[in-house]
Length: 102
Image (tube, rainbow, N blue to C red; front, side, top):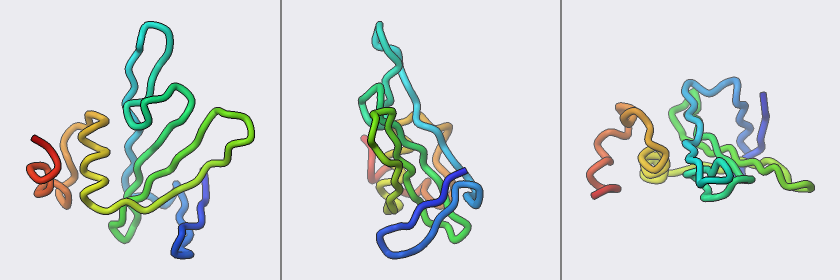
Protein backbone atom coordinates (compact mmCIF):
# COMPACT_ATOMS: atom_id res chain seq x y z
CA UNK A 1 0.00 0.00 0.00
CA UNK A 2 1.14 3.54 -0.72
CA UNK A 3 0.88 6.90 1.02
CA UNK A 4 1.06 10.26 -0.75
CA UNK A 5 1.05 13.90 0.29
CA UNK A 6 -1.15 15.91 -2.05
CA UNK A 7 -0.44 19.45 -3.28
CA UNK A 8 -2.86 20.85 -0.68
CA UNK A 9 -1.11 18.99 2.16
CA UNK A 10 -3.72 16.24 2.51
CA UNK A 11 -2.29 12.76 3.07
CA UNK A 12 -3.98 9.94 1.14
CA UNK A 13 -3.41 6.22 1.49
CA UNK A 14 -4.33 3.66 -1.11
CA UNK A 15 -5.64 1.28 1.57
CA UNK A 16 -8.14 3.94 2.71
CA UNK A 17 -9.75 4.29 -0.72
CA UNK A 18 -13.39 3.24 -0.80
CA UNK A 19 -13.07 2.32 -4.46
CA UNK A 20 -10.18 1.93 -6.92
CA UNK A 21 -9.92 1.36 -10.66
CA UNK A 22 -6.92 0.05 -12.58
CA UNK A 23 -6.00 1.43 -15.96
CA UNK A 24 -7.06 -0.59 -18.97
CA UNK A 25 -4.36 -1.86 -21.31
CA UNK A 26 -4.15 -3.07 -24.87
CA UNK A 27 -1.53 -5.10 -26.72
CA UNK A 28 0.07 -3.22 -29.61
CA UNK A 29 1.72 -6.30 -31.10
CA UNK A 30 4.84 -5.98 -28.96
CA UNK A 31 3.87 -4.53 -25.57
CA UNK A 32 0.99 -3.91 -23.20
CA UNK A 33 0.14 -0.20 -23.47
CA UNK A 34 -1.72 1.77 -20.80
CA UNK A 35 -4.89 3.39 -22.16
CA UNK A 36 -4.50 6.05 -19.45
CA UNK A 37 -0.99 7.13 -20.40
CA UNK A 38 -0.47 5.74 -23.91
CA UNK A 39 2.82 4.27 -22.73
CA UNK A 40 4.13 0.85 -21.75
CA UNK A 41 6.19 2.15 -18.81
CA UNK A 42 3.98 4.75 -17.08
CA UNK A 43 0.82 3.74 -15.26
CA UNK A 44 -2.17 5.13 -13.35
CA UNK A 45 -4.81 3.96 -10.91
CA UNK A 46 -7.86 6.01 -9.93
CA UNK A 47 -9.04 6.08 -6.31
CA UNK A 48 -12.07 7.49 -4.52
CA UNK A 49 -11.36 8.75 -1.00
CA UNK A 50 -13.52 8.26 2.07
CA UNK A 51 -14.64 11.87 1.62
CA UNK A 52 -15.71 11.23 -1.98
CA UNK A 53 -12.80 12.97 -3.68
CA UNK A 54 -11.07 11.37 -6.66
CA UNK A 55 -7.32 11.09 -6.90
CA UNK A 56 -4.90 9.57 -9.37
CA UNK A 57 -1.95 7.39 -8.37
CA UNK A 58 0.84 7.59 -10.96
CA UNK A 59 4.00 5.51 -11.24
CA UNK A 60 6.58 4.48 -13.78
CA UNK A 61 8.95 1.61 -14.42
CA UNK A 62 11.65 4.10 -15.45
CA UNK A 63 14.67 4.03 -13.16
CA UNK A 64 14.86 7.13 -10.98
CA UNK A 65 11.17 8.00 -11.30
CA UNK A 66 9.05 8.53 -8.20
CA UNK A 67 5.40 7.62 -7.70
CA UNK A 68 3.10 10.57 -7.09
CA UNK A 69 -0.59 11.38 -6.75
CA UNK A 70 -2.87 14.23 -7.78
CA UNK A 71 -6.46 15.26 -7.20
CA UNK A 72 -8.89 14.99 -10.10
CA UNK A 73 -12.08 16.95 -10.58
CA UNK A 74 -15.26 14.90 -10.96
CA UNK A 75 -15.19 15.63 -14.71
CA UNK A 76 -11.58 14.45 -15.01
CA UNK A 77 -12.40 11.29 -13.04
CA UNK A 78 -15.36 10.56 -15.32
CA UNK A 79 -13.17 11.04 -18.42
CA UNK A 80 -10.49 8.77 -16.95
CA UNK A 81 -13.03 6.02 -16.23
CA UNK A 82 -14.59 6.23 -19.69
CA UNK A 83 -11.18 6.22 -21.39
CA UNK A 84 -10.24 3.11 -19.41
CA UNK A 85 -13.45 1.24 -20.26
CA UNK A 86 -14.78 1.09 -16.71
CA UNK A 87 -18.00 -0.87 -16.23
CA UNK A 88 -20.18 2.21 -15.85
CA UNK A 89 -19.58 5.36 -13.87
CA UNK A 90 -20.15 5.55 -10.10
CA UNK A 91 -23.49 7.06 -9.10
CA UNK A 92 -21.92 10.40 -8.15
CA UNK A 93 -20.34 10.74 -11.63
CA UNK A 94 -23.06 9.21 -13.81
CA UNK A 95 -24.66 12.60 -14.54
CA UNK A 96 -21.38 13.76 -16.13
CA UNK A 97 -21.22 11.10 -18.83
CA UNK A 98 -23.08 13.16 -21.45
CA UNK A 99 -20.92 16.21 -20.65
CA UNK A 100 -17.57 14.48 -21.09
CA UNK A 101 -18.29 12.10 -23.98
CA UNK A 102 -20.02 12.05 -27.35
